[in-house]
Length: 235
Image 1 (tube, rainbow, N blue to C red):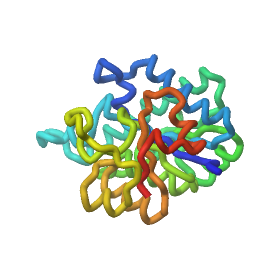
Image 2 (tube, one colour; image 1 turned 90 degrees about the horizontal axis):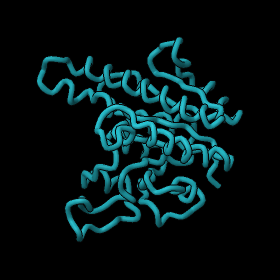
Image 3 (cartoon, helix red, strand yellow; image 1 turned 180 degrees about the horizontal axis):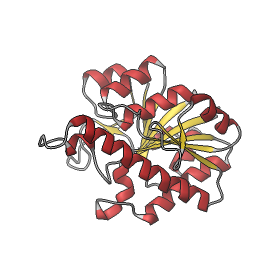
Image 4 (cartoon, rainbow, N blue to C red; image 1 turned 135 degrees about the vertical axis):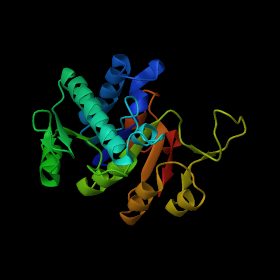
């Protein structure tokens, strides 16, 4: 019985066709998908990336911006997206709290693990922003870290494809979907489900990683209820 999950969305997903910024229609769609879990008594944590605004690695690519500064800029971008998700959920009358790994008390609570768990137990959704609070770590790693800390039963990485393939299904018609792979297989074969640090952390904590299509309505709830044909699993 799945009681608590962490859902990871990419920042790029919020951008829609524009490729940047926040598409409010997609924001509303994501909020409704999360609310569906909430309405079914699932405790939900959310992590969202910041790639629709800036990616630290890309910002530092030409050397003008230091990698550490670029990563902090990326963390701030996740806070912007976190505020947007909080607003969209509140618009649907969902009780939600935003916690940030970087202190900014006017915007959200500072991340405190016991407080986050208490919010979940009280039936509030918790949006975790600001990455890990440290440079050189991705939001994938932040998602796995937060999922481990709150004792989530699984982490769901909501993407644009319905699972993991042996090669890019957008480029190869003969791409084969892999319904289940091991942590070691994902690491040794460089299957980019998430970055290596996050996969290793998930392995250490026996945390299943579910990869699914976020744009198929009702997917998240169906997977949590046990329909694994809609996704791929790393465990």
